[in-house]
Image 1: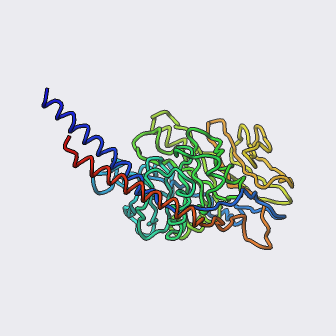
Image 2 (image 1 turned 90 degrees about the vertical axis):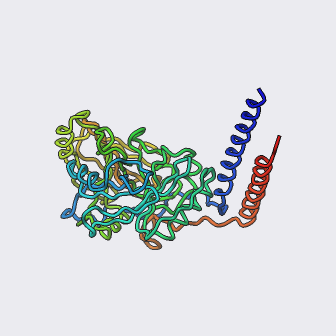
Image 3 (image 1 turned 90 degrees about the horizontal axis):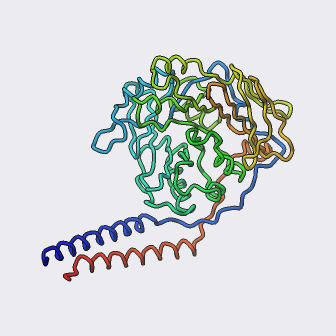
Length: 402
């Protein structure tokens, strides 16, 4: 009995130490600036920004997936297949552009250095607050284990933006802690990743747009299982670019001349059907803005073409047609098309938004949050005190004899 008690005490001590170490790690990685965020400021101005203003039909469209995981060197892997195998799987399904965005690692293109795109998925935190970082020469490993606050998320975006070309806000719908208030505050990212699995509506995108945070939209597979039919070729993007080289991709992603798409799992596991149907997708034929109206036409008839605007409000619907238009009213700060097709496909366009061409080239605003120095000092000093207390408690726990 005495030995059982000793063993239980040792187990309790070990368990207590582990809990204290985990809490200390969370506190140690929670350091951040604290910001003053501006109040929501919807888009305004006499002009309408057309993301498709530079469309060149000679280069439309190239199909792309930017959020792809592969096997990497080492023991920590989220995919069993090497980049070359994953690239070939996409090629068979009609993809022209595939970039490898492994977690906290830059992956070399498997066979063509001219198609190299330096992109990685940032974040190992428990809430899955992840970002795609394009154009960085290295990986930034700083992260908060529990990014609870908007200031922590903004702190990460600001750090990453300084050392990269493009930041994509990944899968908000699957990120723990995503809220309307956070989407109304966060800024500085360029692209919102559209989640077309759990929902085809993407309300969180409208929360940010309605607050005046303009971003383009991309829909990616976030692929981990290229061998599973239900995981590959479910989401994609179509870019108006002359090639898959990074300079062309970068220009397009920052210009907005692309659209995103949700795709069913054709054939339910029958690869031949899946390959064939992926070569017959509906696509945008024409899109633009003229005489006060945004307009779009498709190569196939849609069941419905919806127009969404401020607060995710439904501004208009066109049924059983391959084209639609919408006159942007004075009350509308932005509008975007979503088209639903009979086969289950869904196409998302980038938003048309108000701005003033006399003072800016687009509705994209420079980040306006500022550092709240008193709160920053108080917050980080509190973390330091808590960390010191946890270290002291850990020392006492380990040293305790009884």
